[in-house]
Length: 288
Image (cartoon, rainbow, N blue to C red; front, side, top):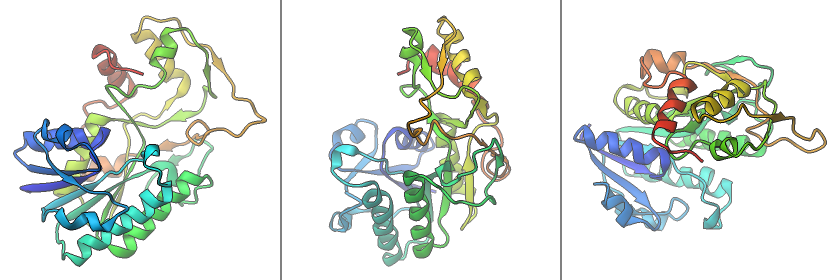
């Protein structure tokens, strides 16, 4: 692979780009408003809005595409407009252009609804019962109808330098509102980026892969470990108000299997569990 396009070069996409450039790959990336930011990283910027096909005129011909558009609330667009309609627009564009390379779409494990601590692999039923998960699954389905060969990566929660939630709260001794005995499923951004490039190089067409680390963790263990690395007091956990609906991420309780990912894409992770990942983040002084 000599050239690639990253559609939506945010937190994950920037690390994908950095790794690809280090491998000598020519990297293009779309942006709606920050070309200088991309240029400074050695990335060739393309002004593009996935919700507006008229902006696709400058999209280059490349060997591979990674679609990882995030939700920008300031855009004034709905989640469905960005995730479903935007992805469909991009998919149709590359189909019309006769694209023959690999198309990798970053999705989410929110498409699963199992919530009793089950071990979930790619064969499990996807019947999300919350709004964002339904939109994410609709986006996958729309893409498959346009490009049956697309590779879908269902990411667990992405964390890493600059994205380590509740670090400052733990330092401040603030209580954590959550069910501490429910599972978290995570992937360090560095490993997630490596999986994206592996999918472009050796991923199998029409396949779906869960992207998660080797060890689903209880929230209790995760936040206690974070407090230890920060030399802070162990956190106090408070159960959410049962009379109010739980946020989609806080209410989940399942274990994501990464066996297919490891057998076909990336055998060894740099951060196989939250322990190694948290240590890396704290050493860099990058947490939120």
